[in-house]
Image (cartoon, rainbow, N blue to C red; front, side, top):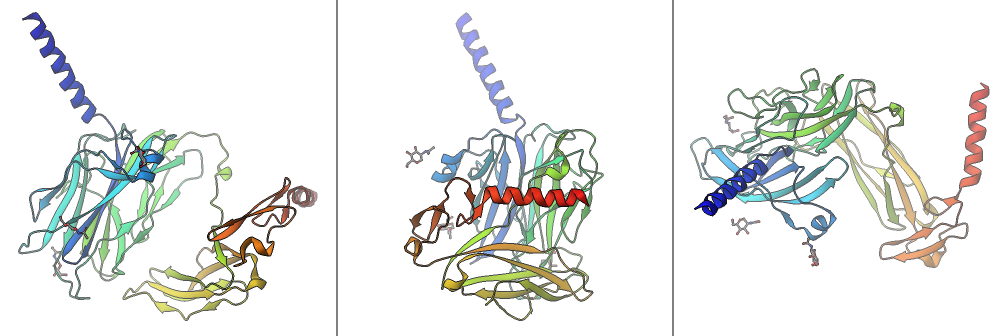
Length: 423
Ligand SMILES: *[C@@H]1O[C@H](CO)[C@@H](O)[C@H](O)[C@H]1NC(C)=O
Ligand SMILES: *[C@@H]1O[C@H](CO)[C@@H](O)[C@H](O)[C@H]1NC(C)=O
Ligand SMILES: *[C@@H]1O[C@H](CO)[C@@H](O)[C@H](O)[C@H]1NC(C)=O
C-alpha cells in the first residue's frame, strides 16, 4: 500500500514536471506567411525557441526538430493543420540562446461563402521578458477570393527578419530597425502593431515597446531609449494592399521577434560592419543583376551605377503593376583583361533629386582557366576548385589574389593618420 502511494506520488511529480516543462518559458517569436499556388495554400511558419535541439548537424542533415503545439485553423475551417509544430532548423545562436527554423505545409481549405481563412499558432509561454510575457498568439488571415485588380488569388507579404536583435542602450537612440519586406504580387506592404481587439493577434506581448515609433509604410521600427536591460518582444502584422491609397488589407500575417537590450561599454561607433559582399565571376561568363528601387510619395527618376568598363544598364522600368517600385537590369561579361577585383555601386534618385544610400558589391573576376594562368601574387599557392580557385597567401600578404602587402599598408595608414593629426 505504502509503495503504491509512493509510486502514485512519483507519477504525480513526473506529470507536474512535464507540465512545467511544456509550459516553461521558451518561445521567442515567429512568423506565418502563405502563398497560393495550384489550388493549394502553402503555409510557411518560422519559429524561434530557446529549448529545442538544433545544431549544425541538424541543419546539415535537414533533420526535423521536434516542435510543440499546433497550427490551428480558427475561421473558415476548424481543424488542426499540423501537430506538433516541428520544423527544419536553419539558424541558432549558443551565445544568445535561440534556435530558429521553418517549415512549409500545403493545405487545401474547404470552400466557404466568403473565402476568408484565419489560422495561427497559440501556446504556453514566452521566454522571460523584461515586460509582459506569458501566452503567445500569432494569427494570419487569407482571403482566397479572386482579386478584381489582377484576376488572381492573393499571396501574403513576406519578411526576412532576424529572430533576435541586440541593441546597446548606451548608443544613440532611436535605433532604426529596418524590416525587409517583399510581396510576390507587387503589392504595397505596410506594417502595424499587432492588437488584441477583435482577434487576439499577440497574446501577452501586445504593443510592448510602447515608446518606439513604427513607420508603417517603410516597415522601420525606431526604437527609443529603453532604460531596463533584458528581452523585449515585438509583435507586428504585415499587410498588403493593392494600391497605395487602399485602406483594407488583402491579407495580414504575424511577425514577432525579440529585441535584446544590453548595457555595453563598447563604444557605439565600434559596432561591426558588414563587408561589401564579394561575387566571384569567371572571365567570359555573364554577370546579371536586377536593381530595384522603391519610393513612397515620389517617383524614381534614375538608377545611377558606378561600374567597371563594359557594364550595360537597361532603361528604368516599373516593377510589375506596382506604383512605387522601379528597376534596371545590369549585365557585364568580363574578359581576361578584367581579372582582378572591381567595385560596383548603385544609387537610386527620385524626381525630387533625393538619393538613396549607395549599395556596393565587390566583383572578383577570375581566370576561366583557373590556376593554369598563375593568378596568385607574392609567392602565394593556388588551389583549383570546381568553380574557380583560391589563393593561399604567403605571410604578410592579404587580398583575394594576395596582392596587398600588409606591412606597407600599415605604414601608409600610419602616415595618413599622422597627416590628419598635424592638421
Ligand atoms: C546525420 O547524418 C549522418 C549521416 O547520414 C548520420 O550518421 C547522423 O546520425 C545524422 N545525425 C543526426 C543528428 O541525425
Ligand atoms: C500536397 O499535399 C498532398 C497531401 O496532403 C501531397 O500528396 C502532395 O504531394 C503535396 N504537394 C506538394 C507540392 O507538396
Ligand atoms: C476578399 O477579397 C475580395 C476580392 O478582392 C473582396 O471583394 C472582398 O471584399 C474581400 N473580403 C474581405 C473581408 O476583405
